[in-house]
View 1: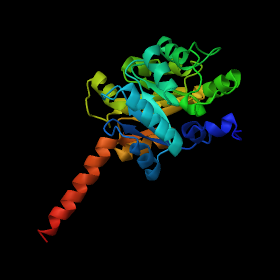
View 2: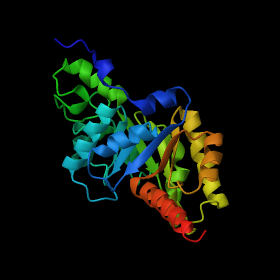
View 3: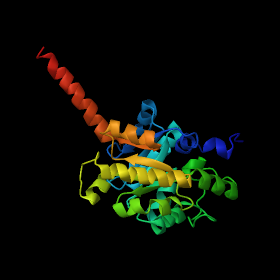
Length: 269
């Protein structure tokens, strides 16, 4: 006999941080394919990680294994899908993800499609699967399980073009979308100011999205600014609350480069 309740099993750190008005910190996984990365994320103090299927060659099997390990470690697993069609969205959720990050959302219609693929009826048309990793592979009463998974699953819409910024209010108004995350790299490229993260157009874009999210009771996310901590701090102060803080590869490179430089300096002293 199992004493846990469904709510004991499913804990979404990101949703709880955001509900408390706190910053939720996430790391990107696109290099490390073994499950140890989940406990590394936990040891570092991250609330969440997301496997970046849009920009890496991981299989769905590998992605699922990392998500399951993250669930066990107490780190909330998301997946950035390469497409927001059902064959990706529903499969990564069935594989253990507690949320999806959907790229290239241009307007309300795109956002509504993601929600339909990510949520069970009556809020979407995600197909019912039983015994998922989030439920510890046990078959709980279906109506209860679906209700809780709908409640705890996070839908993140990526804002990556000037058109999407202009439509931020209509995207934020879509029921079932939780976070609008600005993909700053792609946004700069689309604006013709590639790499100019401190450009006034970028700051205006963040201000517009933050205001739309505040109006609609949604959260704003920061993406692509891991190398710009001062700018991240500025946007957090303005109201952004979900922060993609960098990738496993960039962490290894930064720390390894600093250590090699430190040791190299010993022979010069």
